[in-house]
Image 1 (cartoon, rainbow, N blue to C red):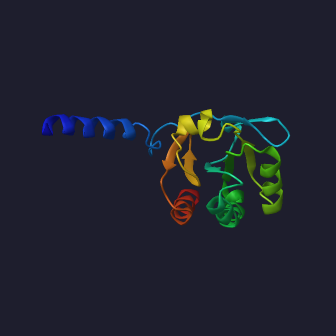
Image 2: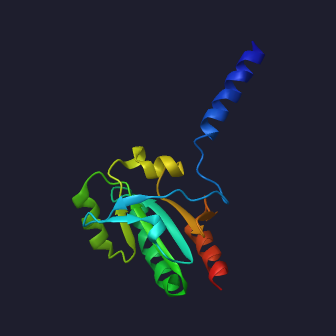
Length: 159
């Protein structure tokens, strides 16, 4: 009985761990999504020393609350080589566009209307938002970190 229970627990753990977010050092999968004008903006076409990849949505209160800090980080480091690629998971196009305008977001803004079921979330194993990662040379160098810690890493990388 105990052995069978242990096997079930190990099986569940390995199943859930396979869904864990991508880790530091892993290659960053390609993302190709449309911007607000319907123009495709592939992640691979973003030319910058560092890319802060942000998964968010206009309906997500913590996401919206963190945007002013993200804009501040962008404004502080963009001229040194930081770009932000913000992937919205909004199903409602107009809500997303209105929120981007309201927040005056200056970075690359794309939308995956399939939300958590879209390819971007599946490829990056995103299960909750807000969720930010730092990319360099096509690899993940920062994940599962607060924006404060990501900013410290950005500062270190760009000095």
